[in-house]
Length: 76
Image 1 (cartoon, rainbow, N blue to C red):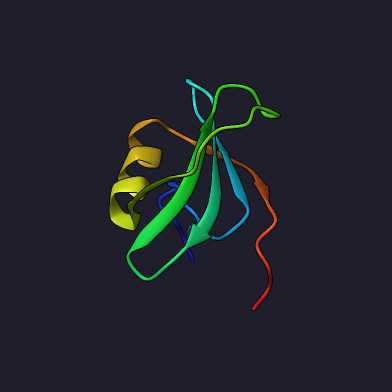
Image 2: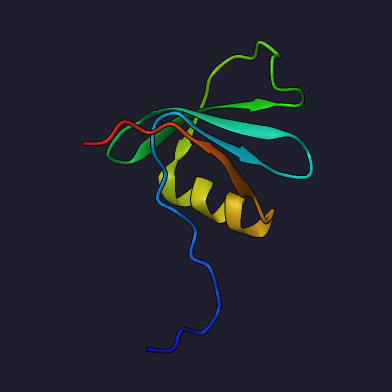
């Protein structure tokens, strides 16, 4: 079976850490329609939690070519 070579973005999960050019995004909590996240310039920086729609966050990660650094999502 041949694939087109494109990697699909993994589904968002609680505890993930994504790397972009501007910094890191840590997924704090995930609901049905909203995602709670922290945008960090440095990894051990304390920041407030922000909230966005899941589809908006996935679009942001794709346009900024984010790479999944750490996936500590709990196995369900």
